[in-house]
Length: 167
Ligand SMILES: CC(C)(COP(=O)(O)OP(=O)(O)OC[C@H]1O[C@@H](n2cnc3c(N)ncnc32)[C@H](O)[C@@H]1OP(=O)(O)O)[C@@H](O)C(=O)NCCC(=O)NCCS
Image (cartoon, rainbow, N blue to C red; front, side, top):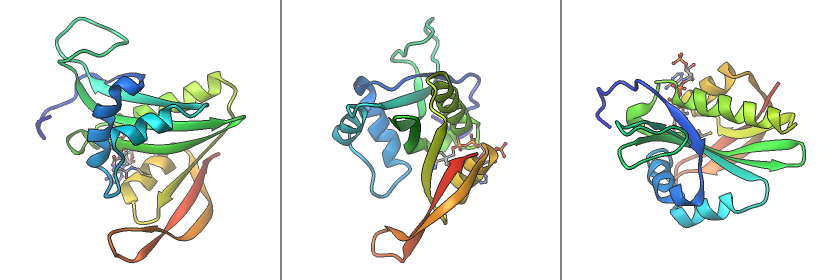
């Protein structure tokens, strides 16, 4: 998507294994240690896991499904265990950032969990990831713990992970 393109509409659908190549391409834009399609399929195939994919609809007439003209914007992967869920990953493609896509994905996760009686939502975020922390704080997450030196990036200094819970 062109940097200057405005996103007129954002649709969210279930991220099934069929979308793993799309998700893998998006993941590569957000992380040094990105996940390939197999890793994404493996995570989706764990009992209790689900994913959501956000896209900008193309000109085709459809709703609740995706077609070749659609532009993938971002996705989120979630793992539910009993009454607790954890965000495994969330990423929005660089050209679509700061347009509300991350917010919409997370709001869809929260409403899905509420519908299924899952009360607790947790995640981990690198303490130097200002964009993600700002998104989570806006959504009502608060820090409940810290894992010292949890992330190691390409020989750089170890970075703490903050454990956050939606309160
Ligand atoms: C973190 C990420 C998913 C946010 O997605 P996004 O679609 O850009 O976020 P949104 O546009 O929905 O932003 C919602 C709010 O989050 C905060 N926010 C998002 N990006 C921000 C930034 N770069 N700087 C400051 N605040 C930011 C703002 O409060 C924003 O609301 P506002 O635009 O009304 O001020 C995206 O930056 C990304 O994919 N980063 C790379 C991968 C990553 O770090 N994932 C998280 C791992 S824990």
